[in-house]
Image 1: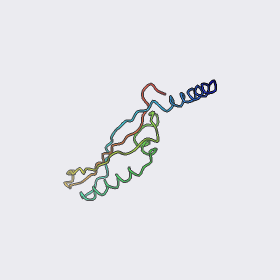
Image 2: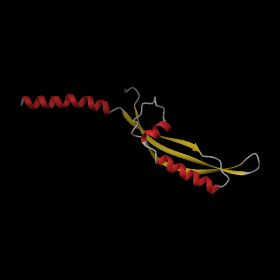
Image 3: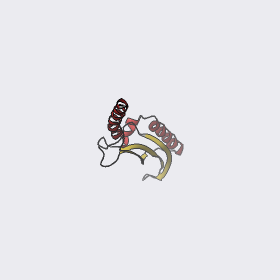
Image 4: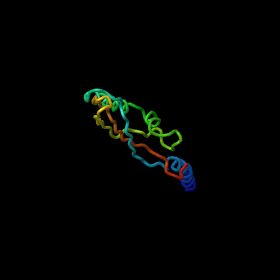
Length: 119
């Protein structure tokens, strides 16, 4: 019986620091708007926007963290993922009288961030 109590106590004592270390994170959602290059056709703008989507979806969690957050933010580097991406095309008249198009990528992403006060 003493061995069983000692074993249970040992497991409880070793599991407590692990639980404390693993906790303290919360999921956070955010978004970012990225402008592409100005082009002279709407189709070229959509094609560029599609390439932008593929580029962001192919990035690793670490690359996304480097893109979206400061290295000083207390985030889980391995938790970044794109949850939604869409492209709209901005059509406008340039000062030379030419119509131009620009892809606008709206990226929604999620990651785990350390809760305030937890280190």
